[in-house]
Length: 45
Image (tube, rainbow, N blue to C red; front, side):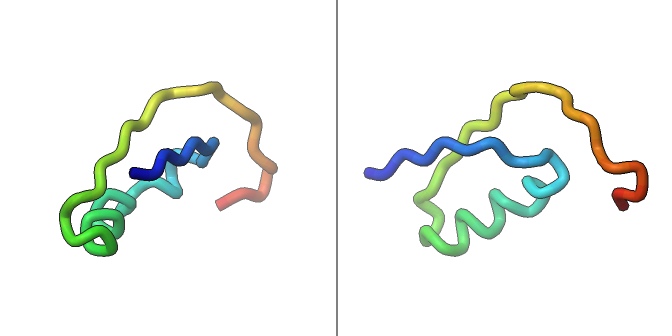
């Protein structure tokens, strides 16, 4: 069993569960919790 903790922008999490399940043969799980708002660059996509 491994536990990973990270701060990740929300837009980077879309599609994560699909990748996780694929890489872990359906056994991987995750929990997502809001941390904070942050400013972005004016020209950010």
